[in-house]
Length: 190
Image (cartoon, rainbow, N blue to C red; front, top):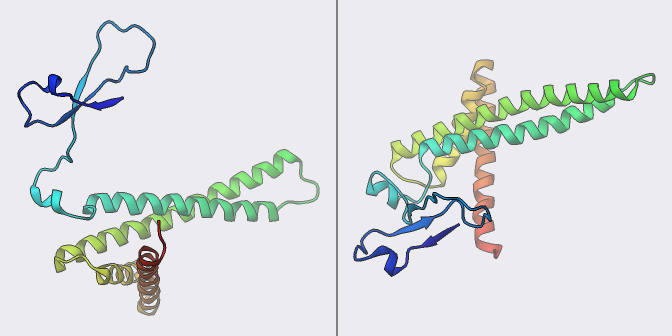
């Protein structure tokens, strides 16, 4: 679909690197007006600092962690609801009633778990981005502090003790995840 412009297509202007994109390439239908678009080959950033950065920005992080959290929570909650729906079968139930129980339980649990984990992802992404902006460095301690803060904020409404325990659990879990990622990078050839 996309190919790099040749020298004859570029003419004398070699400063603009672009690739031609033909959305109708590969179709066997004769189309009278063919649109060929020139797409850039380099990343598009407003500032040079953004292009030199090696990590996602705060908006990308919020979208990524919230979306992944909701999706994984919905899948795990749906599986949990499937198990509880199957456990709630009664001896005289018809197959339609059993299917209805499973679907209702899966939908209810999947929605609830997805919302909870999505909110945790949202809080974590905001905390991590805020800590990176505050410290102006990007290291492991930002992630651990964000996990600690996320657990504490998520359970803050249940009291100080619950927030402290959840903060410690969040910090330990993120620390284990970051350590596991570093071990995988170092010892597992990919």
